[in-house]
Image (cartoon, rainbow, N blue to C red):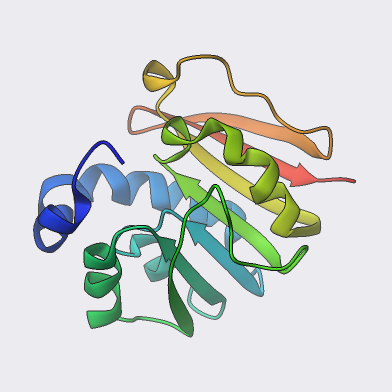
Length: 162
């Protein structure tokens, strides 16, 4: 992490909430109605606002960000401290997955994200292209369905096909 999110956790939504809200709203359009959704790099869990009815898993490295999320749970959910480079989940366990404004920090983690996604499941990646050191590489089992722009990020909507 290039920013100390534990230090800014209490003020994160005040600082970045509007920008992140737009991206999470866009992502929710592709994840709404999914039974189980993993938000990898969830921050304060803004996505959970839009996924009522889904079992929502908020994964983040920052204990401070998870603390903010836990203090205002809005859904059937769990908060998990973990790293997207070593996801602490079994294979094919989620129907939908979001990873918003995180993948530029760990572009090699896309295969691991695909691993935990069920066949036919959807991943929404929000990417700050200008921060990437090299172009993203998607595993063969992920089909790019849509590419959108939202609040300065490129949103990739991918489906697991194999």
